[in-house]
Each structure stands twice: as structure tokens, then as C-alpha cells.
Length: 330
Image 1 (cartoon, helix red, strand yellow):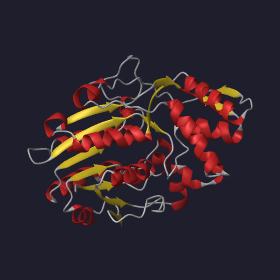
Image 2 (cartoon, rainbow, N blue to C red; image 1 turned 45 degrees about the vertical axis):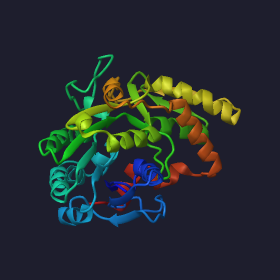
Image 3 (cartoon, helix red, strand yellow; image 1 turned 90 degrees about the horizontal axis):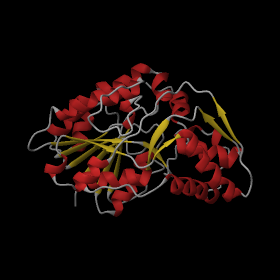
Image 4 (cartoon, rainbow, N blue to C red; image 1 turned 90 degrees about the vertical axis):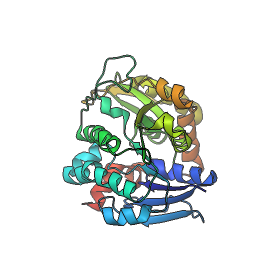
């Protein structure tokens, strides 16, 4: 039974990834600073949860001994959260990264998988942005994601495999739900406020359902070393403008609630716009995303109804920036 060590495993993606991998008969250790607590993770005989800070290299190295796979999901996510405390963000998203890689290697980890971001491309008018496209980050969050990539690859060797994936904007339901991501924002506003505000609208965004995020990690865990060593992969599904995403949300939520949902467009300073091409990962390790934006919106609406969620706009847990502010994290 393979043992997997996941930093940041108690967050949005981790809260769906961990139970998914447990069902695949892996032993999992989650190492997380616990800004959002551990209540969104299941209780399971093959799951160990450690409250820890990746900046504490000694504790991290000791904790990951005996594992084969290291998945790094830990970061201060989303630009607004990042800008709150630039020192916190820099120390976690950049400064801690290479010491973490070296600690993982010393501890005997055989494969290190790094979750970068497709936002490293920034603003591009190319119709198909491939992995060799110049990195033109518009924010420090994006910049640091890109800067960490070579810090992993310079430490790889025959016994230490490094692979990087650049996921598109993630959407869909996870136990530690985030409502500060484009599809999830639009869906929650349509469902609970019965109104959609579109900021800008022309910006292109690639999207990836959170279950496909989990599925690609399973592929990267199990793929032959020769296929993934030192590779960087874009991972996205539907590239759409924010306005077209909003129109999809409007149509689905109107049907769910049996009422008209007005859509309003307002000006935005968010210029990020890019259209990623994910052919490389399809050709190299045969990975194809399966879950559409329509699926994500329907899934969210069903969960909103099933879980009887209320006052979601007043609960910090759904928003990274509000949580970081409340904790006054350092």
C-alpha cells in the first residue's frame, strides 16, 4: 500500500482529494497549518493528520519519512488573501518551497508532485497557451508559483522524480467549500441572491472541476517515471469567457429555482485572460478531464439544497481572504 504525504491537504482541493485517494487504498498523511481546521477530512484508519507549518522544515522532514509520494498543495491561495500579508505569503509560497523539496528528498520521498497554477501565464492573446509559453504573471501569487517550478526540477535525479501540473481555475463542490472561485462565485450569487454580477466578462478563463483535479493527481501518482520526470503539464477543460460562464450559470439556476435571474455586467480591473491547451497531458499520460462547468453548477446547486446552506456570504470558512483576515495569520 503506497503512502502519500500531502501538504495543504485540509483545504478546498485536499478535502475532496483525501477521501478519493483513501478509497483507492492509499495510506495518507495530511500535513496542514489548519487555517480551516480538520473537520472537513474523514476519520479513517489509513489517514493521519498532522498540524504543521511547511516553514518548519525539521518537523516536515520527520513527518514525511516512510512515504513514497509527496503532493504539495500548500499555499496562501487567491490573490486577495495573498495581498493581505505579503510577508506571510512570501514565506509560505516561495521561501519555504525549496527547503521543503530538499527535506522531502532527504527523507526518502521518491516522487514530488507540485501544484502550480495556469495563472502563471497572466495575460495572453494566444488561442492555445502551451507549457512553453512565457510566464507573464500579473500578481505576486502567480509570480511565486512560477518561481517555485525550477526550484523543484533542479533537485530531481534517478531516485527523485519531480513533476509539475498547472491546473486551471478549479470549480465544483468539496467538503471545505470555496465560494471565491469564478464558477462557484457566480453559482452561489445566482442561487442565494437571485442575481449575477459579472466583473468585466471578456476575460477568458480555463476551468477544471475539482474531481478532475483529483483524477489527474491519481494519474501523476501512478504514471511511469519516464513519462513524468521533469515534466510540466497544463490541466484544464473548458476555456470560456467569464460572461459565457455566467450565462451558463444563469440558465441552470433559473431552471433549478424556477425563476428569472437577472445578469448585470460591471467594470473590472482584473485583466487576467488566457486560453490554455492541455493536449500534452492527454498525449503523454492519457489524461482527459470529464466534468464540465454545467456539471459543477448542477452539483453546487444540489449541495446547496441538500445541505440547507444559509448565510453563506457571512461565513468566513467559504472565503480564503476572510479566513486569513480573521486569524491574523503570521
